[in-house]
Image (cartoon, rainbow, N blue to C red; front, side, top):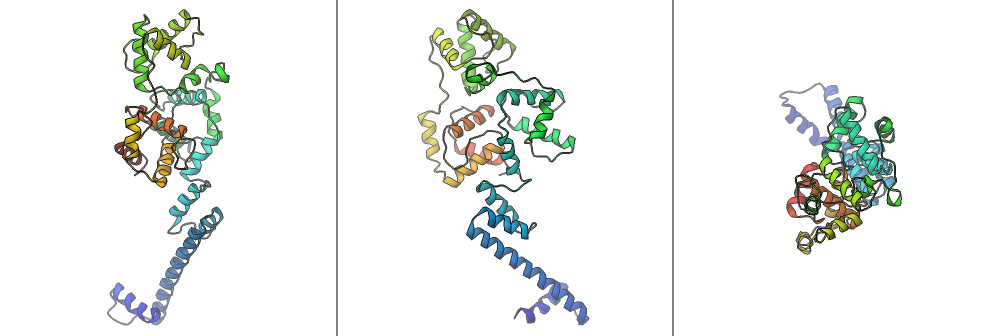
Length: 330
């Protein structure tokens, strides 16, 4: 039936009012037939890969149809299976994660980027949107592939002239890294500034931003309490400051109300896994993307909330779910 109707369809679509040369019409029909055949093969090969749902099946599809209609679907499937396509955004994220960049190194990279004129708007070891944008611009200016995630070679370049604080704290961590691992929220930092002020150590304005004045207050308190005056707090020191101020240390865990609110969202396993991948793309590593919100995911959510100026509960609201999706392209 196709052989009889195709010339008629072609004639109608081209607005032909008279007979076309037989050879020209044959060539046009042959070209359309080849296109339709390729589209059918593309579709059938992707369906076969989808049915198998294996890394090799999706890679086989991409090898046969590198510009196929289902290329994006196949790449997402490979990322889900833990084998993203080389050169894709997911591959860049996973490649950087494998570098296991320490917090001191992250801080050093932020400082180096700032020195080179690429604003990260802070050097705290947390690579959020501003740092990712700075990395992307730096990559563009170098003529590298723009991903916002560093490769091993790029990391070496950025660390070449940077100063990395050597590990000398508990468990081989630097004082900066030790404090960073506390994941102190903005509200916690504000409360600690108030507590330092109440016991005689002027930390300046209690706004949660720890600059030279707050660091100086911490060092003065550490010296008075026979601690190593690093200017960076440990968990034990946070508790001691709170005790001296007659306060209970602020909790960084989500409240029962926040947990209940998230539970009411009824997020599916696929939606949770998608949110974990989006957090990773934003620079907040949940440690896993299996749809289970464990401690790593809760810390990543809390860090994102803190950077967004939200209460760092570690539990998502409906509005925050939408914000994460918007920030990562919908």
